[in-house]
Amino acid sequence: MENQIQQHIEAVTALLNKALPQIEVSDSLSQLDDIRVTYLGKKGALTQIAAAMKGLSNEDRPRLGQAMNEFKAAFSQAFDSKKSELEHRALNQQLASEALDISLPGRQMPMGTRHIITQTMEEIEDLFIGMGYQVIEGPEVEMDHYNFEMMNLPKSHPARDMQDTFYIDPETLMRTHTSPVQARVMEQHDFTKGPLKMISPGKVFRRDNDDATHSHQFHQIEGLVVDKHITMADLKGTLEVFAQALFGQERAIRLRPSYFPFTEPSVEVDVSCFKCGGDGCNVCKQTGWIEILGAGMVHPNVLEMAGIDSTVYSGFAFGMGPDRVAMLKYNVDDIRHFYQNDLRFLTQFKGGQN
Ligand code: PHE
Image (tube, rainbow, N blue to C red):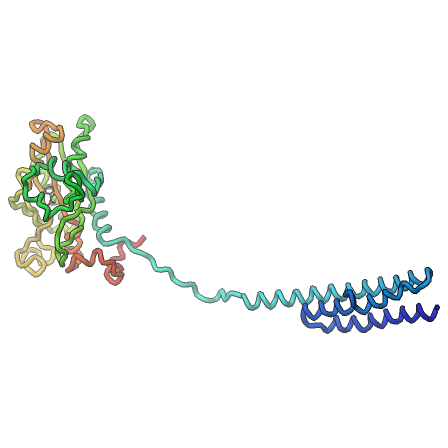
């Protein structure tokens, strides 16, 4: 009997001596697991020895049990340390393969610029804000009432022709100018709180065939001043300041008689050519002058319709086209460049970089 138990214990020791070097040289987690199954699995070598337990005496059984426990302890220790070594190695390999090269220079994100029309409009707005004007915007979809009626454009007026106006329904349209904002603001203004001084920038719409100088959608900046004793001299002085700020201190302006239904008298305003200084060149078409806006004294009918007593108050108004101003200032030969979104064009105007 003693012989038999001795043989079993030696078999366990032999098994351990075989298992430990195998664990030691194993090269992967799956290989390591195979070794575990070989020795400790259901059909494993140690399990087979354990089957011999049944035939052992009560004294011998604990001796084999102890030997098997020692096997398991030694096996587990070797197994666990190998396992953590292999896991460590796998992790390091993964980290190495996924490593980022932080020495690579970053990719430059393209920086947008503000549109040249926006820049031009903001430059004009800033100028008038500096002279105490308020900036007030109005709706692009406008009522016939404000766009025409309140602007002294009776139903029969040719400017109401379907040729010029995008109608939405008989009473609603895309505004053809920023002048309706005049009426909206005049209706609301409380003169006990001070004079009315405002500009109104925005988009306007006209049925036009697009070409180098015409667009069905463009921009205007409306100006309106109403108070007691406002005269044509105030208008002229204001526009002179404007022209000089935008086109250079040497500029002069000239007023030519014109006609708008909502102003009386009405004028067309020219600025002396900023390219040739007035001698005549291709920019001013050899005239020495460039037309930049329409203006006039607010028609008494317009004041009265807005509820303002035209015997007490007077005012001037002007309307200018920032698209045209930008074309002149930056020598742009085709208005369509402004809305075609060609970056080769747009990125030339870096002044509006955010
Ligand atoms: N509304 C006019 C236009 O679109 C411009 C203008 C505005 C003229 C104010 C006089 C006064 O042509």
